[in-house]
Length: 229
Image 1: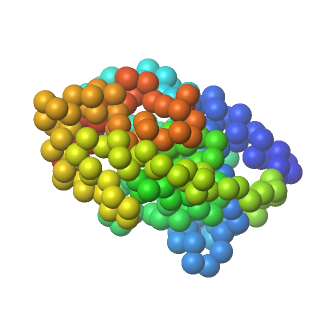
Image 2 (image 1 turned 45 degrees about the horizontal axis):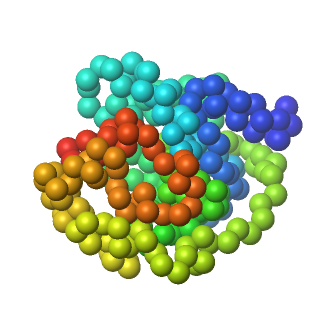
């Protein structure tokens, strides 16, 4: 099967399981990609994840979401990405399970059109701040990848930077995120809007507001954030 056909088939299979292809790149020395199946080097890494809220229903209806055990989204991701890895004879990698953690941020910069935002979250020109990575597949082959074209950093044309002023407790400053201040606010009575609707600073971004997470998904992430802090 031709390499481009493999990616087409993977995209269809991933979508059926609740994942989107989030970019790919040919692995080079320094990328931090571990050895794959049987210790073989990985030739191509394909990123898998979510865009907006379109994949949320796949997880919210899953057995992991309903069983009450810890880390439901990570367990769902491991099951789904692992199933795809078996189907495509690839090596599965995950952004959780550490320390140590795999360098998914570095991989995102290599394979996807993302840029560092003032919030420290990667912003995408099309998806804004409403996207995530749930895993990656390593292929032995150097698959034929679609041509990529330079994209503009959306934050460079944003003069007002509303994301830096929307936080009620000023937890975000250029180059710094005060996670303790943020967590204390979200846990407080005054933090109800953040706790139920998601981060107000994130929602202030003008890029792709139509992709913002719904209340159920946003609440899930905030409950996990509060539980971890």
